[in-house]
Length: 251
Ligand code: FPP
Image 1 (cartoon, protein in one colour):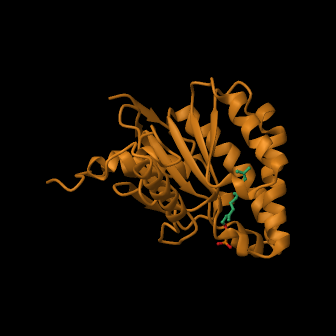
Image 2 (cartoon, helix red, strand yellow):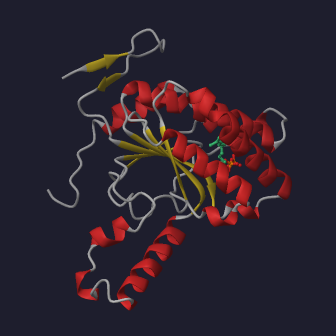
């Protein structure tokens, strides 16, 4: 067993992570930016800016630990209902990442894939998404799915429409539709399902995140607000995951 020991990094205890039993895919719901900002008398946009910094740091940490796939929930199909100035602030953070992220992740071997309905974004924004995916597609390190205008139900609805179209065109017989057919029509087609889903900020729900893919994910919750989330919490989550007994419906 290869253990990653992080003694002294955290004063009170030692976190042991078994590098041979890492979750392949971790999903993260980056929650708590608004409350973090409120506690400091800042506008909510200040919380999102701090959250974006944490996002970049945690992606680096996940890559260093050896995680293969990370999916972050950056903007949901429901987030459009927030006040316009907050949506604008989130869009400008995302745009900054699209414009400058490549430089910042240079040398980290991260492959970026956007999941969600990008048709809702302007042509200019969509071109930037496509450019970032293209520029990183040959990177073989961490695969980073950034969920943008993403909702698990919308993703499944979209998959059902595509399959119905294939049935209509005679390309597939309804009797041949399996769970695998559905997985292949999701944005995460070909990727392993998330082994672990992390949600900080004291909320205990999935909020329409990876509804199909997360059927057997182990869940890890913490009171920590997303901007305060650090490698310490990431290692705690992984270490806790490694103690779980995953049965997938068996005994
Ligand atoms: C939820 O916290 C967070 C979001 C809706 C946005 C998450 C986005 C980021 C962290 C920025 C991501 C940036 C890049 C570059 C990917 P909340 O606003 O619901 O917090 P609250 O529950 O405390 O109000």
